[in-house]
Structure formats: structure tokens, C-alpha cells
Length: 481
Image (cartoon, rainbow, N blue to C red; front, side):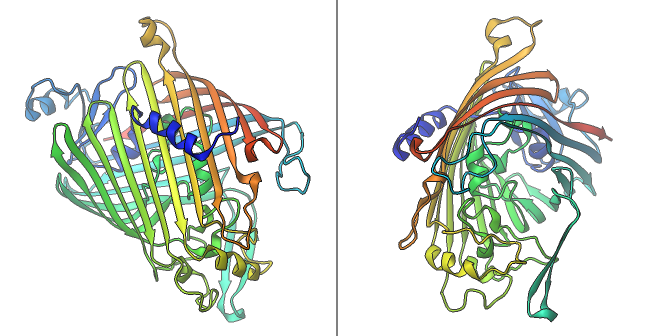
């Protein structure tokens, strides 16, 4: 099952030439107030999110004026709200596995053959919009992961920077979004507060309706913070017309902290947020551009850059005089959806300078530190993958049959794609995997999922990992007025 990195890129490229999915009504209508098209996977119709927050389900290219479209759909649009709306999404997953809990326990076979089962609530999120006026909008989202948390971490400066940690319960409660948007024109708007960093496909569209598997695509969440949310300032809008239509976002946010980088998840654990204040010494800059000029198709590219991740360390002296440690992340993704097929693909590539020095310094983390001392941290990391599903009800043209979507997904990822000597990459992190399964859309916003996953570790040098999983998820609005 092993593949070369080039074959992975070719595979993802083929998928990305014809990819995508309907964007989620929670994140993409709540949190993106510009005129963004959303394609319904069942009907193929496109829903437009207008700058005043009013949405309308329309079929494009019908030759009607904008005024007629708004008038026709004002009263029947299910997402329309005048001043306030409250919604949410959630997931529950049960998994049945044939591998142990530690691929790195020291044996020559990778993960030992141990049958075990797990059940969890990966996340439950609540989201809201409130219009102060047609041009000023407050948006917020809070997410509870794995049942919530009672954890506190303090940096005691009066005790020479010692960490003090108290854990009462696993999981996390996080404000994923809390921002105020000023709508100015369709081509230029401003947003300030806590926002999603839209780098990669999963961060930009991470609700359970936006991926087929029982869990989010593994490759992206093993390399990047997921969901990635930071505090800062953003500009966004839509430019062009017809086939040459583009959505863009640019933002400056709190940068990643090199203290959190490690062997297993590269920079994913470098997101700040342990303390009351985030370090803004070296901000992160993110940009995303989506081509949305063709019905059902969205092709996007995103970029992230932090000038010096070491400057965002908890303690300014931690990295001493090692010099700058810049980080660059580049991602390309695409989505395609019509009545019959949904396909998605994404490639992520990252480069971290001074990764060898960071690896050496991480041995200095204290036992009380919340950060990992597992090294080396790689210079380069990569992920690529894609999934394709078909809508059997529409293919068979049987309106009375359940809406069933069989799918297949392939992923390759390696958080240690390239490691600088004298450090050596750990082949147990090189993973290629296939997932196949079935989605059953019970109703509008509710979905049942079942899938089987098999992973090849280190190009087949170690035990494969196999699991069967069942899940249920929802996305929807509870209250609108």
C-alpha cells in the first residue's frame, strides 16, 4: 500500500482537477457574510449569501435580475434571519480498532496487535449571529471537545517562570470565533476578533457535513492546528464576475509558538492559547484565494507565514541567540459537487527554518511544561489526499429511496518529510491510508456514517492499523428571528 510522495501528489492533483462539496451552512453563512455560493449536494442548486446576511437558494445563470431573485426567495429561504440566529453542530463516534495506543513503545513492529474499542463526543459547537445593523454583525462560536475541560495552566513569573498545571477533566472548551464584521462593499470588508485561519481544506470547511469519514481528514489535522483559530484583523470580499469570480481573505493574527512544535504533529501543537494573553511579537500572516466562477466548483489556495516562531516563545530567553525561525505553509485544495458526485482534495506543504536548533532546545522543557519534548521537529512536512462519493438516490433517480452516499478516501501524510542532520526522521510517522464507507443523510442537517480505515506505516515496515467506525452528526439552525 506504500506510495512515493510524487504518486501522492499526482493522486491529489487528479482529484483536485474536479473537486468539492457544499459549504457548511453554519460556518459559511454565519461566518462569511459576503455573497458566497453554496451548492446543495442533492439538488445542485446554488445558495448565495448576500452582504446583508440574507441568503437565497437559487439556480445560477437563469437570467433573472438580482432584485427579482431576492424578492422571490425572501420568504422561503430557510437560512434567512432579520437580527439574530443560533445554530450548532456536533458529532459522536464509536471505533473498533486492532492496534494499540502507542506506535512508539519500542517494539520493532510499530503498534502492537491489541483489539480495543473507543466511543467519544469529538465536538459539539454552538454558533450565533447578531446584527447591530445591516453593516455591523457580531458572530461567535464556542466548541466543546471530548466532553469539555477543567484544565488550567499558569506561567508563574514570580517563581522563575515555573509551569503550574491542574487538570480536572480531559477535553477542551474553546471560543473558536468571536468577531465583529463591518460590511463595506462586496469587494472589501473588515473583521476584527477571534477568527478561523483558513489554511487547508479542513480548517476552511471543518463541520461534519463537509467530510465523508466519521472523523476529519487525518493528514491535515496531524500537521496543522485543527480547528485553527486566532485573534487578529482580517479583510475579505469578492472580486470579478461570471467565470472570473474570486473570494479572498487576508489576515494578521497571533503567530504560532515554536515551544509547541514536536516530532509527531509538526507545528499543530504550536497554537497559542494556554495563557490569558497571546504573544504578538511575531504575528502570523494568512491569505486565502478561492475561484468560484463555475457552478459547483471551488478551487482554493492558502498561505501562512510567521517571520519568527521562536519570538513567540512563552519565555523570551528560551531560544537564546539562535536567530529567526520562520515558518511557511502552502496549501492547495478544491471541491466539486453536483447531484451525482462530490469530490474533494487537498495538498499541504510546510517549511520550518532552524528546525534542528529547535529540536535541540526542546530538551530544556521542564517536567511541568505543557509542551512535548519528543523530537526531532522536521524541516518539511506534507499531507495530500482526496475523497470521492456518489449519491445513489440521484444516480438511480428514485426519490423514495434513502439518500445514501458510498465514498472512498486516500491520504498520505508525514510530519517528518525532511529532517535536518544530525537528527533522523522516524519512519513510524510516514503514513498512507485508505478509508471507505457509507453516509446516510437522514434529514436536512443530520447524517449517519460508517467507514473502514486501513493504514500502512513506514512504507509497510511496521504493522498496519485497521479500524471500523460508526458516527452520527448534525449541523443546523435552532433559532432565528
